Amino acid sequence: MNGRISDYVGSSCEVKTMENDLLLVGKIRAVLEDNGIALEIVSSDDEAMPAAAYGIPVKINIFSSKNGFLSLGGRVYITHESFWRINEIGALGENERRGYFRIKIRTQAEVMGPDKSRRIRKFKCLVTSVSLSGILIAVDDEECYFREGTQVTVNGLHVFDGGETFQVKCTVHRIDKNRSLGTLYGCCFDDMTIREANRLCREIFKQQRADIQRRRGCGS
Picture 1 (tube, one colour):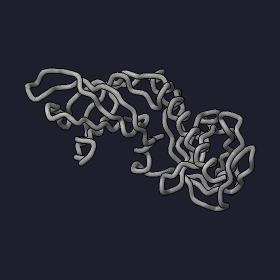
Picture 2 (picture 1 turned 180 degrees about the vertical axis):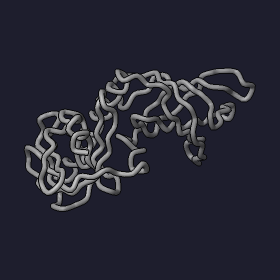
Picture 3 (picture 1 turned 120 degrees about the vertical axis):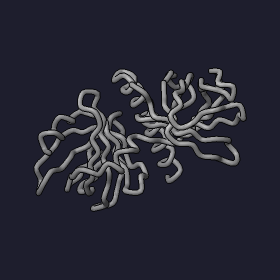
C-alpha cells in the first residue's frame, strides 16, 4: 500500500471529518513510515494551515491526473501552520469513495434532454452540488421528461460566479422531488477527459478554499 500512496506525492487532496465537513485543501508532500504509514500535507496556495484537534479521525481524498482517485482514512497527529501530519493511514471502503470532492453550490446552467413529446430541447436548471464524478441539478419545468438512464448535456456549468464554464455529458442515475426547486436529478459524468477533470478539480478547490476562508473570517 505504501508504494501506491507514494505515487500520489505532489497530488491535490482534501481532508474532511468523518461527517464530511471540510477541514483543508492541500497537496501531499511526503509519505512516511511512522508506526505505520503517515502523510504530510501542505497548503496548495501558500496559505497558513488551519488548526485541528489532535487524534481526530479524518478522510483524505486524493486526486491525480495520472493515477486517478485514492481515498484514505487516518488520525490527525500534528497540525502546524506550515504542514499537517496524519498517522494511521489506511484504505476506506467503496461507500466512502463516492463523494470525491463534492461541494454544495447554487449556480445556473442549461440542460439538454427530452421533453414529454420526446423532442430534445433546452431546460433551465439549478446546479445544487458538483463533484468529480457528477452533479445534482434541479429542473422546475413540467415538460421535462428525464428518467433514470436518460443521457443529457449540461451547458454553462460553473462552480462559482465568474469561474470557468464547462459542457458535460451525463446520465441520470437518481430522481427526487423538492417542494421549492422542482425535480432533482443526480447525474454521473460520461467519459470526462483527464484534462477536463483536472480543470474541474481546480475550480472545486478554489471554491473549497473560499469556503474555508469565509468560515475562518466568521469565526475570528
